[in-house]
Length: 144
Image (cartoon, rainbow, N blue to C red; front, side):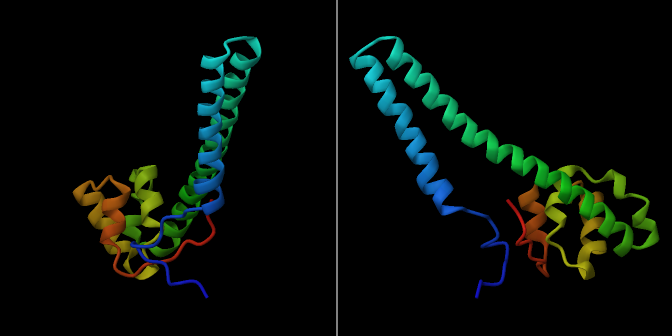
């Protein structure tokens, strides 16, 4: 059974990606660069270029997935806010930045109005700062 999600453990790490795939691809760049230095030529130069492209492909694949996820989170949070927030705050949903919406997803329905007021009033922009203000954590287990 998975532990209850909190601020302390909410960051998502995919061990095979973060600790195997990326390091292997980075080492591959170093190995091919070493081979290029030891035996300069078209093939070894091309190998370095391909190694860098594969590494960047892995990184961009993750970035693209996270960007799509963040767009969905923004949409979900706007819909949730229109349902959960009181009328005086509902009209201000458009004032939230993407960063604020992404962080506010962890606030429970019960504290969303109060936390939204604080975020708008104090212009709290950083995701980390907003997440630390959450008292009743709402887990987000369906993420990239």
